[in-house]
Length: 169
Length: 187
Image 1 (cartoon, rainbow over the protein chains, first blue to last red):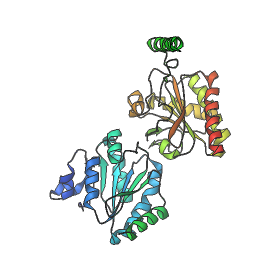
Image 2: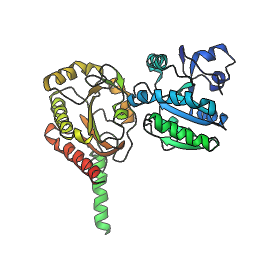
Image 3: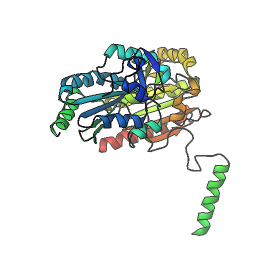
């Protein structure tokens, strides 16, 4: 898995490979921009695990309400083979808001920012996605997109999905 | 029936050439019926998130709602917002939502605050953060020349589009919202 990406500054357009390999010191201090293709590649790297990909934004109230549940489920299930990738849909000029959000929640999993906030990104992630938020995809151990949730998930709903997919491994 | 087809085609072409989208079967401004409503951050002026950037489309989720966009901070807009607020009050028990968005941007903030004080508006009054240059204009296909656009939506899809109306024509919005709520009730 890519090194956990921490954030003290904003750098849109950074190549994912540089950020995820973690070979360069600055990579551990930034939020990396990610394209839909790179996101799919990251998920593919996790084959054998259940991968939760959550799309959120600081201006999306249900996303903020949902986020603690995602952190909690990750902490509860990570030892059993669950990974979480969080992707911010904020634009580059909302860096301060994102900083504040991450400082508040301190997510223990990698956080990225969408390389673009448009149809190209949405459809690249999922052809049936037109930008509803929050949006959560859950991939099974085979790397198949097993669940699509275009709504905020409760702790129980997410735990139930993750648990069910883990049991299929 | 070739003659009538020809006449119809000629009428449609004339309407299009004369710039009358309604006659040509098009819409004046905003997303068309059946199109999805994407997330759209705005700056909240009087709502629950006053002073912050917030996406009311995200907040409403699948609830039936009216997204109302206004070009001008003037008397006609004030009257339409008051009527929209009244519509909201009548149907809020059915989880109906509404938001009024001034596309003029942050300059309209004092005007909205005054409107809220004068009429005790319950629906959130918000502005596009970047005014007419905001990404919301493109995302929602808003025509900057059109005075107002009402998108009546449910499950994050547009059910009806009513645009460029006078306050006296607000019944069109009321009717569209009632039809939508009626359909939901029938399901």
